[in-house]
Each structure stands twice: as C-alpha cells, then as structure tokens.
Image (cartoon, rainbow, N blue to C red; front, top):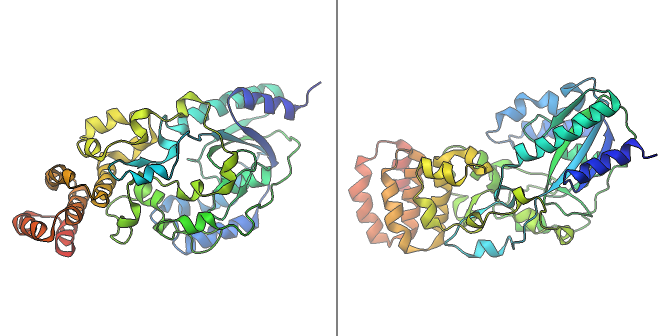
Length: 370
C-alpha cells in the first residue's frame, strides 16, 4: 500500500510539477531576523507591503495558526533559449523567461487547488494554497523542505532541476512526515554576484532591491534613476542574469507545460514594434502574460531605456513622437533616449525647441541634465 507521501508525489507529477517536498511548519527566528534587517535597511525599496505584512512573513504560523505541514512544489519554466545571447541583440527587448507566455499565478494556483482538494478529501484536514502573492517566505520554507537552497543570489537552486522554477505551497492541518532540509551547495562560486549589471548584491545571500533590474523594471513605478539606465541594456521586463550564470542550471530543462513555453513573438520583440504600442495594443499583446500587470506606461518607459541603449538611430522618429505622450514617465525616458541616439548639436536644437513647452518638473530635469 502506498504512503500518503508517495500519493502526494504522484499527484504532483501528474499535475506537471518537477518536484514536491514536505516540511513541518514551525517558527524560524533566523529567517525572521533576516527579514527584519532587510526591511530596516530599506532594501525592500518601495515595496511597502513587505513591511506591512512582516509579522505574517516572519512566521508561517501567524499566517495560519492551525497549519501543521507545508507541501512545497516546483513548477519548471525553463526555456530552450540562451539568456545571454538575447542581450546581444540591441534592437530587440528582453523579457524574463518566466513571463514569456502565460501568467504563472493562475496556472500554478489551479494545479495547487486540485492537489489540495484531493488532499482534503484524502485526509479530512483543512488546506490552503499559496503562490508568491501571499505574505509567505516561500524560499526559506522550500529550503527547509529540501526542495533546494537559497543561493548567493537569494533565489532557490536545486541540484536536480537548477533554478528556473516557480514555487507553489499547500498548507494543511494534517501532520505528514517531512523531508530533510537541503544544504547549501554554492561553495566558493560567486558567478551570480559577479554577473549582476547593477551590483544589487551588497554581500553573498543579500539583495538590495533598490539596485535590482527586476525590481526597477517591474515593481518600481515612476522614474528610474539615471545611474541604472545604461546597465539595463535591452532588458525591458525583469532580469535573468544571476539565474543564468548559476552553474547548477546545467541540470535545468525546458518547460514541458505548453502554457509556459515561450511565445515566438515575445522571445525577441523588436523595439520599433514595442515603441508603437498604445494601451489597447499593449493589452492585446500581453493579454495572458504577467507583463500586463505593470501597465503600458511603465512598460514603454522600459522600452525607451532599451532604445536609448540600442545605438539604433532608426528609432529616433518613434522616440521623438513619444515626447508628446500623456505619461510624464514616458516623456522623460524619451528625452533620455534621444540624448543617447542623437548627435549633440541635434539634441541641443531639439531641447531648445521642446523644453519650454514641458510642464512636468521631472521631464524638464531630464531635458536639463541630458
């Protein structure tokens, strides 16, 4: 007769998960202190919700006191693409691997709910499912469950499947025999730290979101500091560099879930095409993608930075058109991009012609400092 653990593993495999591990829920003072310091030092940047939910993040039992066990699952989203090769084509934009097809939140949550409902029926114990929108420190929990370990880039790494995977979690009131925790296997390697374009890692195992391109292009609303723009290159949504540099990804495989396999039109979209997107066209292109949630204006802001880094003078007419965009963040980055694409006399003439008609203070500063 199969054990409950074996049944869970079979269910997880049937839903397309690459791995499932089990951990007994308990307070973790060490992780709680790491979270406290992260927030106290301001490394959560503008993500105020991390501070607002600190108590629940610090202890999973605050999130649900009756829970006894967590089942932590890995959903592979690896792509049959070279992440560094895409960075070399300056006329195209680079979207993070995880966002090249369907928004994973709905997809993974649906799978978790099916397993959870089966588990509830099987054990008669209450269940809850969590994806990364919940106030749960899923990566430390996954390490305690043996799914992988948090590498020096703070992401989870598995010896079996690398690090291109989402984490989904099921809490249950049932007590289930746990797996052994995973140990750190980074050794002396620091490839993920050294590859970061903006120096977002002040030390191994520490991340400063204020310098992270993933944060800047996705979570950060408003203007991106000029300090970081050249280093962003053609990354227009997220950054995979620290993951891509990890040697353990030699064990990674391309996703078998069709809804996570990269859509052809998103693998290397031309900047010229993206600059032409109005709100309706943006929503149509990214209708089922995680990219949609940042909105057209923030996305075009990112594309304009990529245009400024491209060296492609052919983009000047489209960028110039965006000087009249309703969104100040878009207009500001259009100014910056033109300062990079035009010869100095041509940009000076354009500034004399356009700056005095600008009403937004930040956009005027871009004209003045470009």
